[in-house]
Structure formats: C-alpha cells, structure tokens
Length: 631
Image 1 (cartoon, one colour):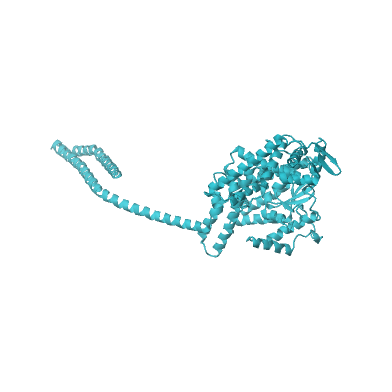
Image 2 (cartoon, rainbow, N blue to C red):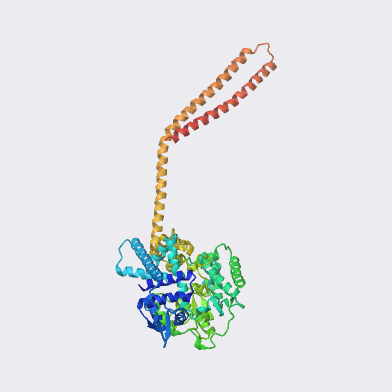
C-alpha cells in the first residue's frame, strides 16, 4: 500500500536524523538505495526525483535533489556528471544492508500495526470483515497517521483504539515517530533551500480567530491551551533571536466583535434570558463562577487586557476594497459552495460563509494577491480553530493553485513549520509540542465529534420545543443531559471512551424522553408500592399491638391498685395509732401538734408514691416497646 511505503520512509528518515545525520546525507541514502534497486545507472535530476516518489513515496523539491546529488553523491565519487546526465561510477554497488533491513523492518512493523487494528475493529463489531472493508480500514489508519483522515469512516475506531492503548509505551512511540518524521519530511518538501534552516528570516503577521484566542485563555480545555502555549513559545524564540520582531500576532475587527457578542450571550445566560448551548465549552467556562452581568463584563475586560499584555493586538483597519482584483467574495463562489453543500446534504450557512470570505479578502489584499511564495514568505495568514474556515481556505474555488499558501490554516500546520525551521529536533525532549502526540490527536478528534453531536441534538431540541412537541420539563432534562455529555479533549480517556462513542452513535431525543417517562412511571409505581406496604404493615402491627396494649393496661392498673391500697392502709393505721395514743387528759393544743407531726411525717411517703408510680409506668412502657419490636 502506498501510504505504508511513505510511513516506513519517514520513520527511517526520522531515525537517521536522530542519529545526527545531516539532511542531505539522509536524502543521499534514499537516492542510492533507489538507484541500485532500479539499476538506473544514468539519469537526470527529474528522473531521480520521480524515482524517489515511485519507490519511497517521497515528493521532494528537485532543487533539494540537485543539491544532494552535487554536494554528497558527486563529492563522494558515487556519481559523475557529464553532458547533463548523472552516471553511477560503480554498477556493482550494493544497497547499505543496515538501511535496507531497517526500511523493510519498518514496513513490516506498520503492516503489523494495521493487522492489529483490523482485529480490533472485528472484535468491536463482532464480525469478520470483507477484503474491501479491511483495505478501507488500512487506508483510513494510514491517512490518520499522516495527518489526514479525521473525517473518514473508521476515525472513531482509530481514535478509540489509540486511547485504549495510550499506556502502551512501545505502541505510542511507534505511532508518534510517524508524526515526528512527517514534520521533517513535510518541512523538506516545502523548503527550497535547506541551508536556511535554524532561524526565521521573514516577517509574518498571524491573525488569530476567536477559537484560537479561546485556546490562549484555556476556555476550550487544558489540551488546547498547551497546544497554543507550544506555538506561542516558538514565536517568542523567533522574536528573541531576531533584531526586530519578525512574528506579530493580531486579530481583525470582526474577531473583536464576535468576542463581544459571545460575552453578551454569556450575560443573557446569567440573566436567564437565554439557555446555554451545551456544545459551547468556552461559554460554559465564561459563565462559570459568574453571578451578575457585571461579573461577565469584568471577565470580558480582563480578556482584552490580557491579549494586549501578551502582545496580541487589534489590526488597524484600511480600505481592503481599493483594488477589487483582490476581492475573494462573490456570488459565483457562494453558489458553487452552496451547491457542494447540497450535494453532500450538509447545511449551508451563507451569512457565515460570506463573513469568512471577507476575511480572506483582507489577507489577499495585504498579500497584494501574491500567494505562491511559500509559507515563509506569505507575510499574512489567519490562524483558525474553526474547521469550516480551514476547509474553505483549502477549497479549490478559493485556492486556485495547489502550491498557493491558503488564506487560513490551523495551529498544527504553523507549529510544524516553526519547529522544522528552527531545527528543534525530537529525541527525548519534553519540549516536543503537544500537537505531535498521537493520543492528543485522537482525543481532539473524538471531543470534536461529541461537540458536533451535541450541537446537532441541541438544535433539534430547540426546534421541537418551539414547535410544542416536547414540554419545558423535557427540554430542561435534555439540555442537562447534553451538557453533561460534552467532554474536553483531556476528559476523553480509556474510562470514558465507551460512553463517549455510544453517545456519538446512539443518543436520541426520543429515546431520552422515553427513558425519562419510564423512569418517572417506575418512581411513581415505587411510591405507591411503598405506601401500600406501609399501610399493610401498620394494619398488621395494629393487630399485634392491640391485645398487647390491653394486657399491659391491666398490669398497670393492678400495680396502681396495689400502690393506692398500700397508701390507704398506711393512713388507716396512722389514724388508729392516733386514736390509741390520745388520752382524755390531753389538751387540744397537744393533740393538734401531734396530728401535724404525723402529717408532716407522711408527706414524704406521698411524694415517694409519685416516684413509684413514674417508675412503674416507665417500666411497663419499656417492656411493651421491647415486646412490639420483637414482632
């Protein structure tokens, strides 16, 4: 397979580069191997350029090939140059056995990776795949590794496979080396003079769009913030090592207005005048911790102050329509784009598309219509985190010539360019950009797909609510479910991956409402059942308790009767004792004094009667309670 050849080639290239081999030396190794393999003893520069493409799938500039032939292969006497042709001096020469075995080993290793992935997909789908399906899977995997294929049929399976194996060090290194080799290969492919590597020579103004500015603030998560920081660090290095600031970061007036609108919506959410779109991670971060509109205003003001402090400034407006030949906007382009969307059954946002084209006009005007000088000399470019803008900038109706530098690109592209241009290398350095990590790419791909699904379902939810097809309670429940389902890239792990894929592929508004209805019904049935059980239990307990109550009342009455009888007998004998003791000769005063003394003596006994009664009551109640609890 063609992609497999390229993967093996760039991996070998990267390994040779890690061994401190000069780029021209590495290219010469590939040229020699190709010449000997094809037995092509006489050729010109164009033929050898095509030979490298046919054997190794390398598409390198002919200028780089010519320099390699001259500075390495002629100098080492492997070739001579006569009458416009290159001649091999020793037709008995052999391919370097180490180079040959290394290249074949890499092809075998990545073929094994393909086979392992095919098995993974078969296990997930619980069925054997056809030869056509297997070929498509292999193609999708290789495109994913080579920086493309984020919207292919098996992208979800590729991403989940990578995330589930992210702790497998050998597996991760095997895939990461492809990205690192690709950075080197792509850098060489689009660099006419490799001798210019090591520093950035030209001025470049990069216009950041809203999404990229949100990366800077971490509104879209830590992964995106790290990716921006890697990019920003390279820019600071370029500017620090230059006599004057070579790279400038700016934003257009339209971007400023878009940010103001974003914060305005945040204030409406705080005032409960609109709902939070659960697919907008940045919006959730902005409203988080805010209680009043003034809190939002403070955040907005701090946003622009921080941009200025970081050297990210607003572009001064000029007349971008002075030379109409630089105008990218036009009804014909819109018609073609609208038709393409209709053919692919995709929704077309004409107003949004027109706004993006307006920004492209600004870039084209600033470039004075010159777009074919290479990235290093492009002078102006938009850095976007919006996939539609990226797609639009690379659309053939906008980018006429394949070699033209697009009006907008993504952060990976520019980071790769700066990294290669500065000859940063790889090795074991912790400074390797986050975007080079294959796991990060897989997380971003799935996080984006989840956000797209949430946006799609949220739009459908609003339409149904406005049409009266669902209740307010159902809409709130669905909104909460969608909000909880949105995940930042760093939240996509081997633990959450299964639920994430299920949500992308299976979440349904109808199913959610049905599940909520069933749940409510079960809860209601459960409450009724609980009340019925409680009623029956009370009835049964009443049957048991009633005779027990009667029994303990009789016992209590008996104890009280004994107590009163004892008191009565005591007072009776006290009276008899009084009659027996009194003599006829006793004065009334002495008798009264004696009676008072007896009464005072009996008062404690009366009080003791209350204590005895209380003790008996508590004892009876306690025994009654224990008896009931045993039932």
